[in-house]
Image 1 (cartoon, rainbow, N blue to C red):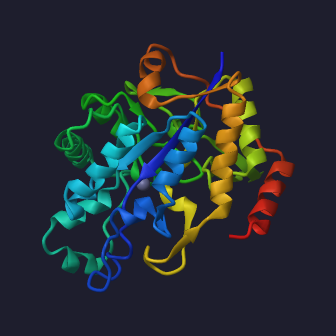
Image 2: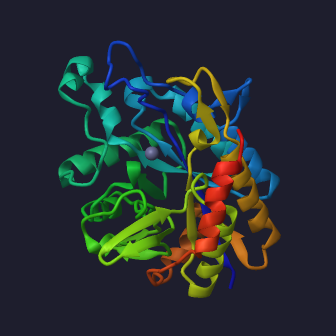
Length: 331
Ligand SMILES: [Zn+2]
């Protein structure tokens, strides 16, 4: 059986310093997802074009609560565009955006930025926010999402029974290199895991350094994973039978800002190369790997038990090669 891979993309707008400087700055809308360089969409379209050139489909987690500031149309247009190109559109949510539903938000943020974490939030509030997110999908007249991803990959176990109750069967809320939940039951490095009736598919993560009880983890992002590291993780996943390997990226990874806003962007050559090489590897090894989406694999995944919690290691040589790539790539 082929090892499955999911390329997941969080599509979100940027607060862009508006909480720190509510008078002088404002959130950045579609430009923070399309990331134009010389009028070419070098974020979202670069990802879509690259996937499609290799015959692959991605899973796009589209952020819903930005609608509190921007209204429905800007992200609706983007979500529909992704869906019309044949990719998965699922629900992503950053709770900080709810602040903009308060007319006096500029005064309220003077005492500090609002939380952007779903971890530690009480059940009632969690359910309200998730319900508000689903209502956005309904207003957008898009199919109800079958999967959810929390902003910053920050959750605790309270979210799973609520997702189940709201009829969301899949989640991808965990990435140990990005955030390590307090609950050791959520220390999941990849594969598929049933938690209170919801199937969690963590972003693939591996421990790349440990000394005694001290350890460092890395999550499989496109920008942060060298070509050899990616190949090693994929090969290790094939051996461990813990699939899918869930990869994470964001449109903004493919550009570099030359100022605080999105007015003057330039292409991030390193990230572009890494996505191209990853897609090339996957399309050249279709006998071993199958790139799938959450909606496509939902019936098969939910008909089965989960997988083991994998423990993948990367060779020091692959890490060294990434560091050299980082250093040598001129962009
Ligand atoms: Zn996000």
